[in-house]
Image (cartoon, rainbow, N blue to C red; front, top):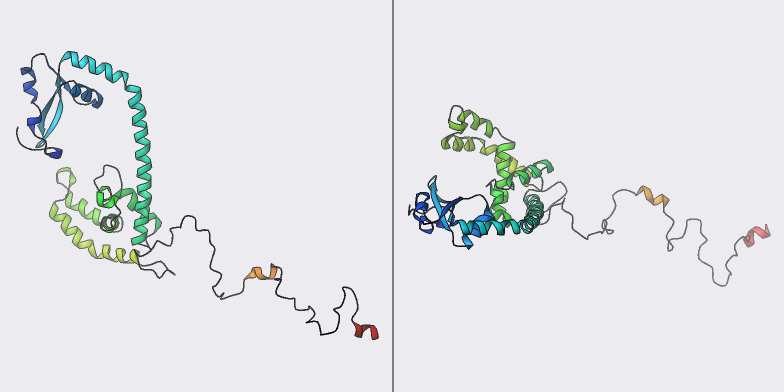
Length: 282
């Protein structure tokens, strides 16, 4: 069992087989499953027990002495509360990071596909970023918000949600083990629906109506800028009158239509309520 396997190229040289546990005097086999107990035993000199599963070398447990096992169990019980708190903190942190990542991924989609409907954008995010799905949204490049994985995620949703790709695979996999379509059938189905995928991709890549910016060059029209509370620009020329103008009081620098004109030189301004001189003579 010296063949390489497992993550990081681990070999059987790092441990012993299950059958070899009996060759270690006073050792018992402790199966894997309790991570804290396994770590405590390894810290006390336990030996890894490995085996081959599906062509990979994996750890099956450890071989430890009864004394080490008893001491490890006491330690695990004493630190149970502390580890529970740590697990909860880690869970909350992961949920927060995942939520932030989904928001960032949605913004990246809107940047590249300004015309994508909101419902499709949300479906792309939910499908591509699903934890442990091994989809493109879980890749390191996607988490760096690179353009290519974002585009691949959107095209994957177009393929599954806007074409008959899945029905083609169901027909091709009928009668096959686990209902899986052969590789050749998948390739043929992708070739057949590619024009539809390209058409939707182009439609979603167009700028929104009234937005002349090219996709990917600036923020999406639906993306707000934090702290930007400015209203519409006041230097725009209105194409039609504002109905609210009639309700606004006149500006101080704009006299009403019936206001008296400029005061003539040498003539005193009329007092409020006084009749004009001409009217008095009449």
